Amino acid sequence: MKTDTLAAAATTRRHFLKTSSAAALGGVLAPRVALAQTPFAPNRDTLKVGLIGCGGRGTGAASQALRADPNTVLVAVGDAFEAPCRSALNALRNDANLRERVQVPASQVFVGLDNFQKVVDCGVDVVLLASPPGFRPEQLRAAVAAGKHVFCEKPMATDSPGVRSVLESVTAAQQKKLALVAGFCWRYDLARREFYRRIHDGAIGELRAVYATYLTGPVKPMPPASARPPSTTDVAWQIGNWYNFTWLSGDGLVEQACHSVDKIAWAMNGQLPVKAVGNGGRQIPNQDGNIFDHIDVFYEYANGARAFMAQRQIANCYQDNSDYLLGATGTGTIKGWSDPVIQGRESWRYRGPKNDMYQTEHDELFASIRKGEPINDGLWMTHSTLMAIMGRMAAYTGQEVMWDQALNSQERLVPERLTWDMTLPLPPMAVPGRSRLV
Image (cartoon, rainbow, N blue to C red; front, side, top):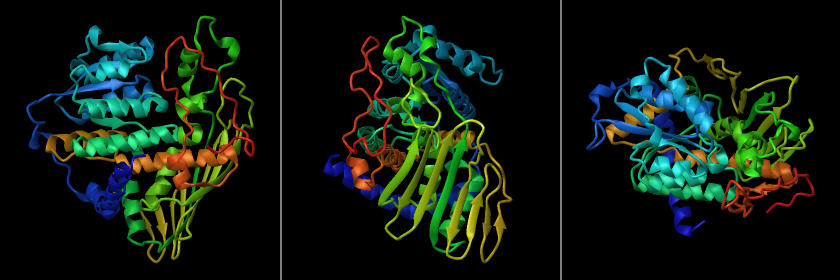
C-alpha cells in the first residue's frame, strides 16, 4: 500500500480509538431524531437507492433502506444472474408498505459481471453492496469514485490486495464526505453497544482474554459435480455456488464468523493483534469446493492479551455462537442472542430497549446522510476483515502470521479480469505445512 494511504489510515484509526466509546454511548442514550425534522439531502428531496447483489441479504438490505427513510425509492438492481433480480423485485413489490417506492424499470435491471458499474452509473444516490465478498473491493471502489453513499455488507474482501483496495476507498470516502456503513450488524445492536461501552469503561478491569465461538452447521453446501449442467461455465458455476470457493467467500471464517472476529476487535477497542496462529481443515469431504469446514485461530496482542476464535460448520455437532470475555476483575458473557451479562465488582445484565440491528444500520445511515454528518465505518470494518483473513492464512499454512504480513501479502485470490467463458481451474484445498504463506 502507498505510504500516504497508510498514514491516512493510521491517523483515522487514532481518531476512531478516541471517539468510539463516546459514539457507542451516544447511539444508545441519545433520543431518536425524527427524519421529518432533519434536513433533506442537498439539492434533492428523494434519495435514489441502487441494489447490487439480489440474494436474500441484498433483498433484506433494500427493504431496510426503504423503511429507514420515508423519502427513498429503489430505482435500480443488479446481479450476475437474472433470476435473483426478479426474485428480489417480486419480494419487495409484494410488500404493501414498500411497493410504491420500488420504481425499477426493466431498463434498470442490470445482469452480468459488470452489473455493479451500471447500477452506480444510473443516477443513484445510495448503493447497497451485497454481492459475494470477492467482488466487494472493486464494487466499493466504483461506488466511492462515483460519489455514492454506501451500505457495504461484510466481509469487505477475501484477500489482502482486496483489503488494501478497500482501505484506499475508505480514505476516498472520508475525503468526499460520503457515508459508509458496514454490514457488521452487531455494532448496531443496542444491547451490545452498552455491553462493550461498559467493558471499555473498566467494568471487568483490564481485558486479558476473549473466547468467541461460531460453531454451526453448513451454510451453503456444495452440490456434487454431477449436478452441474453441461453448458455451465467455470465462472458461472463458481459464482452460483460462491460460498464454497475461497476467492468468492474467503472461507467460513471470513464470510460468516467474521461477525465474531469483529466482536473480538470491538472488545479490544480497536487494538490490532500482533500475530496469529491457527488450526483447521476439512473434516467432511468436499471435492468440488476449496474451503475448510473448521478453523481455530489464536490472536496475540502487544499487551499480552489473547483472543481465541473457534469456527466450525459441520452438521450434527454442538452449536454455540457466543462471546466470553475475561478481565482482571470480572467476566463478560454474551450467550447467543441473549442479553449480555457482566460479573465483576458490580453485576449487570442488559435491561434496556431492544432493536432490530439490521434496520438500525440503515436508520443511522440515512439519518447521517440527511444531517450532512455521514457515518464512516471504513477503518474498523476493514481491520476486522483483515483479522479474519489473517486467521485463515494462519490456519491454511500452519504458520505464524504477523499483522504486517497479512496486510502486505501478495496472495491474490480474486481473478483480475473475469469473463464468463474463461477457464477458471479450482485451486486445491490448502494443506497446513505445505501451502505457502505468500
